[in-house]
Image (cartoon, rainbow, N blue to C red; front, top):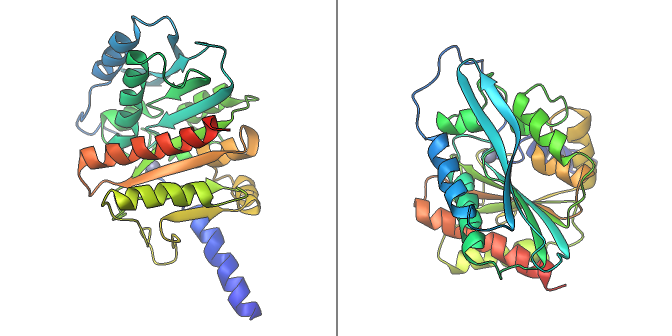
Amino acid sequence: MAGKLVCSIVTLVMALCMAACASGGAIPYTEDPPTARDIDGLYSRLDRAVAPQSFIKAQDLGEVVYGNFKAPVRLYSIFNRSGFKYRVFLSGGIHGNEPGGVETLARFIEYLARNPALYGNVSFEIVPLTNPWGWAHDVRYNRDGIDINRDLAPQRSQEARIIAGYLKESRYDLMIDDHEDPSASGFYIYQYAMPSQDLSRKVIAAVRAGGLPIEQNVNMVILKTDDGLIDAPMWGLWYMRATNQIGVPNYSRLYNSDNVYTVETSTRLDYEDRLAVHQKARQIILDRLTAK
Ligand SMILES: [Zn+2]
């Protein structure tokens, strides 16, 4: 019995080590991989969308610089339309080879810009692209080979310093980090030290009802989702903090919010289907928040 318990704890700790996609780092890149995506195009598109609306402000939190490569980490703040009640932070693109997270947030910014009356009691702070170099080159890591989503504690990377510097001492009613998983075959969601699985189960049920697969095994046999849900306990977050492995959601749950989720879609599935899943998950979680 004791052996089984220890085994369960070891399994859970290893699962947490893998939280939010696969883990590890890479050696620093000595040459840039081919350019896969256009950062200026993305920001120009968003700037055009938000320009007519005075309730959306774009602000550069910092600039990521590698030699001749320079790109901002840009925040879009959508606020104070009727005196907001809830403060929400949304982020994506910390892993550059997970394009759905960036695109779903870009579309959500455009959607809010076109529909000023929506979520009028919510103040959104949205960072669609946390790792611009990685996204531009379709690479998970930054140019130094650092997995930024393991770097929020040591903050060796420029990108982690930028995002942690912004989040510092802020409190949010909800935070969602959008990811994708090249190794997974279906949808899954992380929640962090939450009192109930009810809302995550509702999101999973909605994805299943839409006909898309729910992840049962994330990447490795040892990291088992429970029918699409990884439910991280608080002691596991502190373990990750103590071992210098926390990413944005873990950091956020410890320091910024009691209500944090990571949404994961499989990059093996149709792109538009993945984007629909991110949108659906966000909508269900936001609806629960704003119904309070
Ligand atoms: Zn990821």
